[in-house]
Image 1 (cartoon, rainbow, N blue to C red):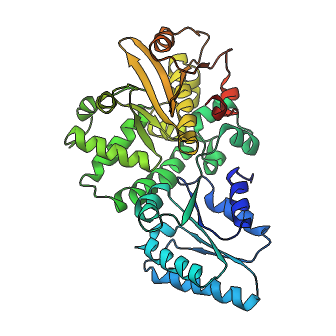
Image 2: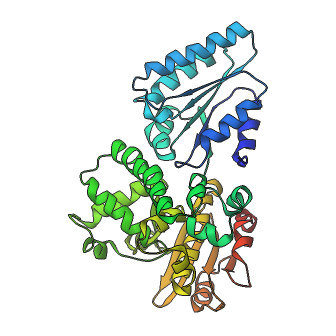
Image 3: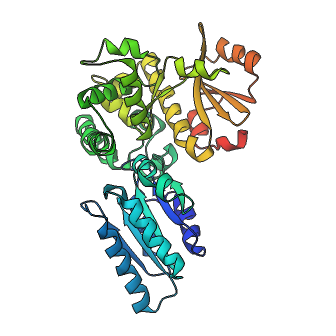
Length: 393
């Protein structure tokens, strides 16, 4: 399997003098464990790898930490690497990590540490609370088109429809089996373990319904008030908004806000739903096959726009920008990227039609630094997905 770009960052940081804990965090099934195991095979320094998947007591962390210290002393090594996978599944894990890390710092023990786990669970349940100043985050997002093309030979159309989960690639010739894989291996554990078990959820059935509905509406605007009529036991819009925030933190699906200078208008805006991986949109949309989606231009346009949104969301944390949509009456622009005082407007076209009045109106009103029309002849999707948005800031 190919090596993801984050591997070079991790290798470089492991090679540096011991300063901070390295945290590799990202959504499920994106290759965090595989990447680290690839690195360990060719690492010059001795290492120990542990998985905390079924561990309950944080005493286990102290015991594994002491195992690593003993190995460091026994081998007479100058340094050693301790890797703990699924660290977030242990109760009060951050307190144990802080205690052991600080002890090694005080006693000049050159034990370097790498932790792996879910973005939301790590950040919400310990990093920012107990380990502030002691860690560096290496975010891992979903697989890109370039990665899926190199590893599995996927076309741009296959990537748009099937998304970027490498484990699902073996099943795309049987769409029913592929959908079951996405739902059983990714969706169900992500919601049950990353959301429901770690948050106060009074209506888990509502959360499941909201997830499915918002995925099927990816790249479209839908108010929470209208959603209430489609959901059973829906409660109120505040409940839906809070559940959507949890789904967004778990890198599943989010509701983009409308761009506005007035912050209150952003928060009051109708959300534009956007999945983090197009596989979720496809798997949660019933009755739409690859052939049906691809051969209907209007329908395919939704998948293309959603794929661009996935790409933009995947780079948002790394590049530290915020993603919005814009609409004023009948004038709209698909995506607005804001980085500091820099604005970039992006309109997605899946056919030959390249004109858009909304882009012209937004230019006159907000003067973005750059405005891009993606798709068709002006900028093919492959060119966008293989480029570097950072160059425009």
